[in-house]
Length: 484
Image (cartoon, rainbow, N blue to C red; front, side):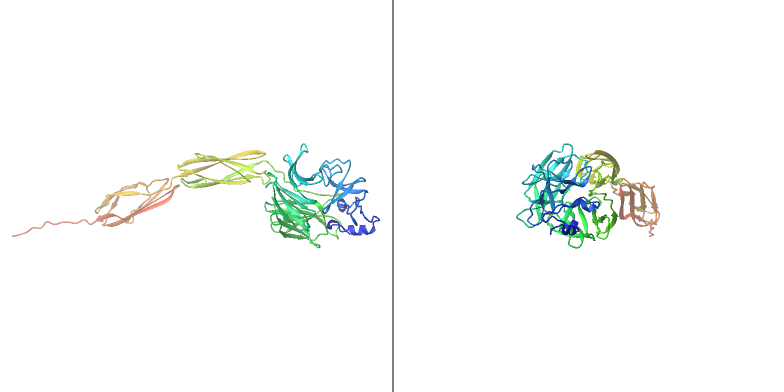
C-alpha cells in the first residue's frame, strides 16, 4: 500500500475503495483534499478513469480539476498527468499527450521583471528554462538527464543567478540536487540529497532551506548546496503538510510552512526564525474550500533614499572612508555606485545596498564627495562635504639666547599647519597664550628650557628646546689701584 506522508489518512480510504489497482480521490470541503493524487498500486498499470489534476494559475492556486480523459504518469513522489484539451494558463505539473512541454515555474519570484525561471520535460530530457512573462516564450538554459522530478524541489536564487532542482535517474537509487548557473547554463554541481526531504527554497549562495519528515516529526533544515549535508534548524509537531505551502524569506531570515495536527481541524502557518531556530508564530490559516499555496512576495523597489556617511573634517595625506547606504531593504539589487570627489578620479562599484570607498587629498580646503546610486528602477544622488587641514608642525626661535640679567628675549613662532591656539612655557614660571608673544624679560640668572604647544584643526604638536636661554649674573668690576 503506497501513500505519501502528506496524506497519511489515505490508508483508511484505500481500505474501503472498490478499486484494487487505482485509488481515486475527489474534491472535498477539507483543504486536505486538494493534494489527493492518484497512486498506482500492484503492477503499476495506468487506468483510464477520472483523476484529480493539480493546476496553478493566476486566479486559482492548486485547484483540483477532474478530467475523465487523463492518464497518470508517475514521476517520483508526484503524479504527472497526460491530458487532452486543457489550456495551461499558469504552471501545470506534468505534460500533455502531445508531449508539449509544460513548465513548473518558481512561484516565489514576484513578477517585477520580464523573466521567470522554470523547468520542463520534453519527453526525453528535463530542461531549466527562462519564461518571458509577456509573451510566454520559453528558452532553454540547461538540459538535465533526469527521469524523475517532484513538485516542491525547485528553487531560484535570483540574487546569485542560480536554479536548484532535485532529480532522480532511473539507474540510481538516490536523489541529487542539480545547481545550474543561469548566466552560463552550466550545471555546476550534482549533490546527493537526503531522501526524506520534501521541498526547499533558496536562502543564500551556500545554503538552501527545506523541510523534511523523519517518520515522526517535521523539521525545518538547512541544506549545503555543495555537500548536500543537512542540519536541523527547528522541529515542528505536525501530521500533515502540503506541497506548495513552504516559502523562505531570505531578506528577513524567516521560513514559513503550512501544517496541520491530527487533533486540530484547521491548518496553521508556522513561522520559523532561521537565525535562532525559534518558531515565533503559529497562525490559523484560512484555506478556503480547496487547496492552497503561497510564496514570498517582496517587491523590489526603486531606491527611495540614500545615506552618505563620512568624516566632516580630517587631515591631508590621509585616506578618508565614506559609506553610502541605499534603502529600502526591498530595493532591487545589484546597485551601482558612482563616486565623484573634488580632484579625484571617479570610482564605480556594483554591489548590494551598501558601498564604501576612500579618498586621499594632498591639498587642504573644502572637498565635495558625490555618489550616484542606481538600480534597474531609478537613481538617486547624495553629496557630502569634508574640510581638510594641514597637520601642525611646531617650531620657534628666541633671540638673543644668552646675556646678562635682566635679559630681554624676542620669541618668534615658526610653526606651520592649521592651528589656532598656542601655549608658551617660558621656563622661569612665565607663560603666554599668544601665538606671537611680546618680548619676554628674564630677570634672574639661570639656564631655561622653553616649550611651545600649538593646537588646532591640524592637530596638536609640541616642541621643547632644552636649556635654550642662558641668563648670566651681572658682575661689578672694581678698579685695582697699585701703590708703590
